[in-house]
Length: 128
Image (cartoon, rainbow, N blue to C red; front, side, top):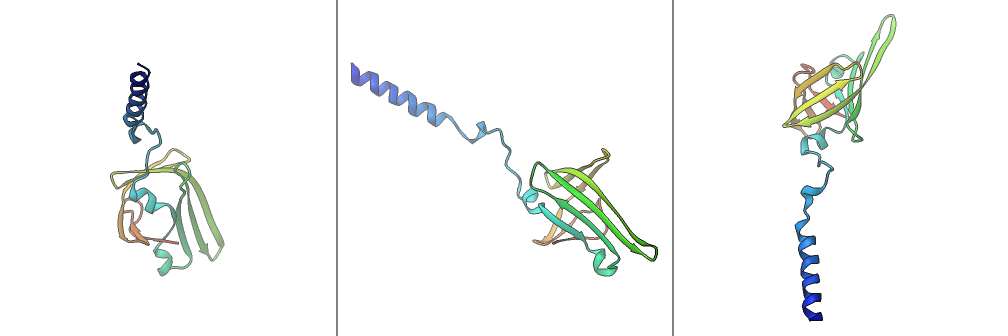
């Protein structure tokens, strides 16, 4: 009788463990596109005109980031920085700026260090 009780207990424990799976994990895995986008991206027009520097920085922590725009003119330096939140879904980048402006763009990687964000700029971005 003790043997049957122990065997039943072991079977129940095993079944309980096997019934758990990764779907029970509430944390969502990042897509390959989202992982590849993490980092600092310099817009390529900087290569044509070094007086213009437009960067998008996408952080890995909770989808935060920053867009910086720097322009050097005869009158001096003009710069701005806008905080943002971002996420990727089906190769579409969704950005919300601190003033609640929403930007959506397709994501097309040319190679590991170059990406086209068509709805954000006519120029490609280079990973720094």
